[in-house]
Length: 308
Image 1 (tube, one colour):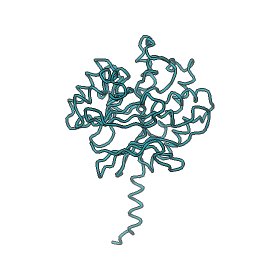
Image 2 (cartoon, one colour; image 1 turned 90 degrees about the vertical axis):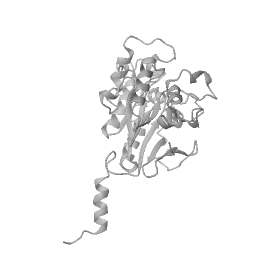
Image 3 (cartoon, one colour; image 1 turned 180 degrees about the vertical axis):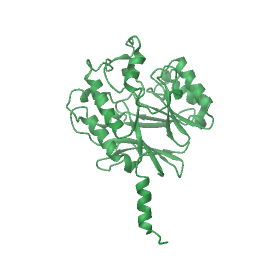
Image 4 (cartoon, helix red, strand yellow; image 1 turned 120 degrees about the vertical axis):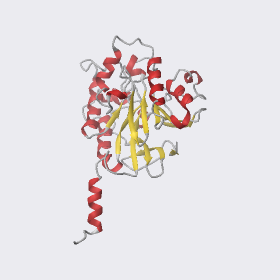
């Protein structure tokens, strides 16, 4: 029997594993897209494709080559409350359009609730009745998780990342019920490690008043870095683009303020994204910013790598 040339065999293998989310890749990637409310504000006043559309179109074009699994938002998806009602909010239309682009190319969109998503333009504005239902009307179909992976309210859920890592998603100012569900979920899966995603800062040096109020910080302190090695959130300081540090509990914190990586006007998409990648051969995670249009890396922060 005649053997096929090695080059042909390699080409067949490459073709068989050329779709993101299937086959074997040494590196698995996600994009962290934090605080997109400025994208929504701009997008709601511009024709398509607007900068947010272009950003997601670019990610779809890179999905196969980068083995990109999806986009992890950090809350504050839009700016002004009322976005659940498309007839009253251009931002809702802009957000739907932008995430429909990801849906169409098979990328997961993880969209936790931020303070703007819940309360409106100012933190503390009272939410209307059934606010969570209205919020979920936009995002519930997007995270690809089973119903058993959600809390009773549906505002918290578990999103698979890669291997034994899971992303546990919490809403802004998660109440005791949501936090109890998260605690039970982590405790019930001793063989898994959880990255906890919440739209709140947990840096004790900068905002000690927030530490005791943040469910993500309490979970990290309770379970420690072996079970909760990473917390992810949106940074509240507009001057900080990408911020990482290790908490007092030994947990790695990753904060991304994506809205400052791109113009707040109608200018074209600049190309800056923040990658969260996992090397399956070494077990190492890395976070870094890159201009995917020019190849420039680390304009805002040096690459941070860690092995939980």
